[in-house]
Image 1: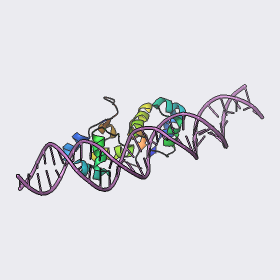
Image 2: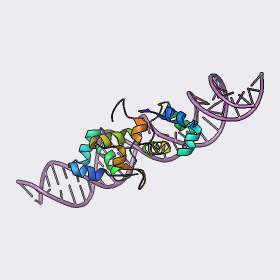
Image 3: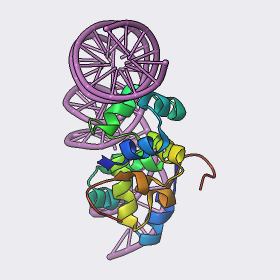
Image 4: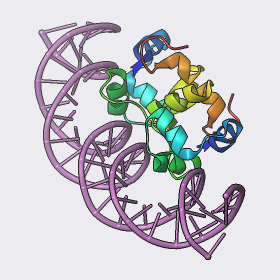
Length: 67
Length: 67
DNA sequence: CGCGCATGTCAAGACAACCTGACAAATCGT
DNA sequence: ACGATTTGTCAGGTTGTCTTGACATGCGCG
């Protein structure tokens, strides 16, 4: 599962810790998703998309090019 | 996490087992998501949305009214 | 009635997604 | 150079997602 967290976060100048606070998870959880170690839960994926004002499909990519 | 699986499945006349086959999980996993016992993984959520030709946001609702 | 199919549910287990707490290394501002 | 922040990572533990296998129920069909 690819994601655009690092870019989206950089655009807003948010640290991993700040994003974690905003969506209600630990900074380690953000790091693990961002570096591809975990896939997020659906709940967390919704929270992350919402934090950036985007759709899940605009943040996460299940493969390479889908939509 | 609410979802429209039962309706979408009924529209296509698919059993839980058939949907499970289509997305690559057991029928019990489909049942558990459909009856609200589990939230699906993000990977499964993408697979389910894809099976219906919809976006995740059109199948799952994190609460009541979001987008 | 007897059969097949769909659904709901339980149990036991494997593994993934989270947590807290800690430590090291790179970067940034002053 | 120094201190503060950020990121990456590890350990150990809890909870959630999914698996197989099993059993009961309801429903339509012959």
